[in-house]
Image 1 (cartoon, rainbow, N blue to C red):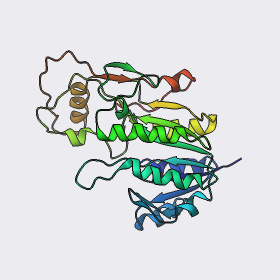
Image 2: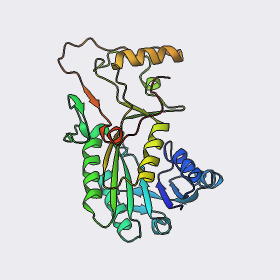
Image 3: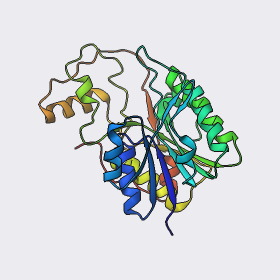
Image 4: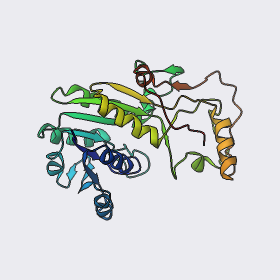
Length: 269
């Protein structure tokens, strides 16, 4: 039996996810902050709404969007870099206020492995959060806000660095000099596996849980990005020689794999 699912934020991850949900037999409602993208969503079979979260409130008819759905996927990045930064915590507070007025009963909140900060060695979902960036700190606070409301069940996914069609961090790193932490491992996940994880959570009804989403292959950054740059004909990034004892963190997707699930799409391609 199909469900009515809402995707708040139909961007790079949200739109392909919405299309897969439709293929799975769900009725999908999606939001965008751009009027131009409303037609794009409608053409893909997504019931589209223009909604924008801000620290001062929510623009657009959020209640109309929420009134159609019982499950909500919150896929809104913090965007705390640059000059025009806003409080992500305040945005989520406004959103939760609106969700409480609705019939939404289940939520997937897309978070990030940034919540583990500069942890050393292997970390799993049971490891303590110790964020060092403003983005990481606000994500931890937002995770707690969702988990603390008992009138809906929230599952959190902490994704590693996202890669996929037309998106790879090597394009941003190409040609850069004197980068640090070259001996630290990568913690990446492909778009296809992000969608695979979300669909698995929905199908298996894994509610009130926390999942890390990172592909289980962790070569050193300087090796991985050198090879990925070569494949693309790009200048390789240059890493500083460091004598630090710090090895960096390897994020394990323990909860997902312990439940018998596997990742499908390698981060080397």
